[in-house]
Image (cartoon, rainbow, N blue to C red; front, side, top):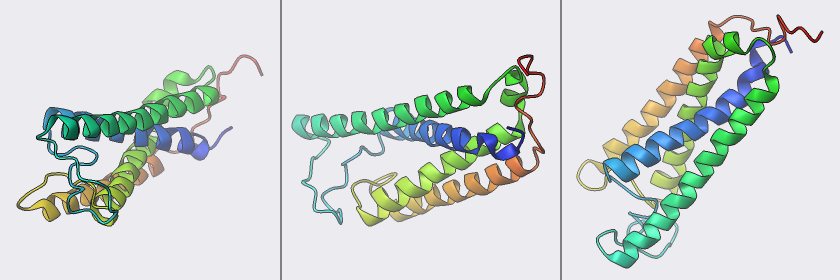
Amino acid sequence: MATRNAIALPGTILGVGLGGFVDGILLHQLLQWHHMLSSTDTDNAGIRYYPVDTVPGLRMNTVWDGLFHTFTWLAVLIGLGLLYSRVTASRGRLWRSRNLWGWMLVGWGLFNLVEGVIDHHLLGIHHVRTGPGQLWWDLAFLLLGALLVLGGRALQRGGGELDLCQGDQRT
């Protein structure tokens, strides 16, 4: 497998999972700007409202945050598994390659775009930061996603060819 696109799928899936970790750990848990269902009082999906300032509401949001984290964790595991399946004796070159890091940024950006469009805008079940300026926070999240995709593609394209089998002693 001697093309730079050989690691596109594992890099992108790994980036989706890592982007989800940043969102879930930083925005859901550390900053507590939102939870998975924290804006269902104004959503477009008709989901019951679970206020985060009540114990039952916070419990339900915590369950949904856990489901979200499970999805991102599985994405990381699948990305690592796919990446490992493509690695041979050249694994050191792979981890230092602009191709892998570029594809991971693409995946992180795709996470932001999909999560932002679906959860923030279409369903409206939560926002990056609820309250004054919430639309701007949501738009900034999408802009960051687009910049990550564009930056990742630029980084990946500048990486040149990556021969994952070069130096493999089994051939």
